[in-house]
Length: 222
Image 1: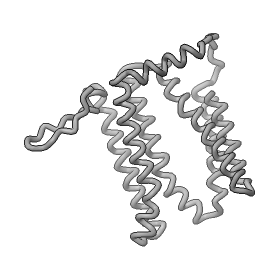
Image 2: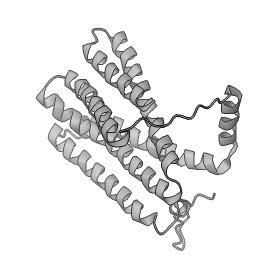
Image 3: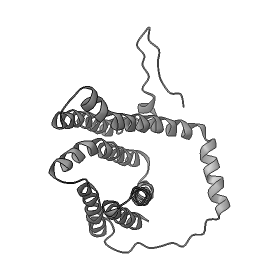
Image 4: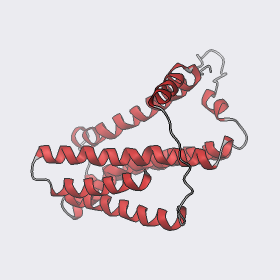
């Protein structure tokens, strides 16, 4: 699944760079997104297979760091690449990066064929499992927090070029520096979170009650 997603992502990126019409570009861009989604669901599954508990929480924290940094760094890297060449370079760079990941994973993570245990999961069981997740109040609260945080970040990434460059009149280089400051701040907070997970549980960190007198606490109750 992981390698298949990378190959689909790589092929989609190349086809987007070669697209002649908007419809072709949209089609291959969707295909590229589907390939990326294969990878997005495969990595957490690998972590759950290998570790559990606080070790898993720390690894998921590292994934969160990468997940936040990648889209946050994209506008700065895109501006740099546009200054050096055409927009197709961005897609070709993504295709090359996917190919590099295939080689790296094959050498470092999967040097030998993994034993395959045949399993048969009825479609009815998959639906039932999803319903169990949707009905679990604590899980849905965690998912809600994650959705709100990621949505806020994407809104900022989408609108920041217009706010910084069109409204404030900043240059491409100044915008890249300001965006890099956001990336550095998010990375620092994520790195701080990892040692905290050695002393506190993930639920305690998410709650983070504000006990200052006279102010309302925004603690989430699980």
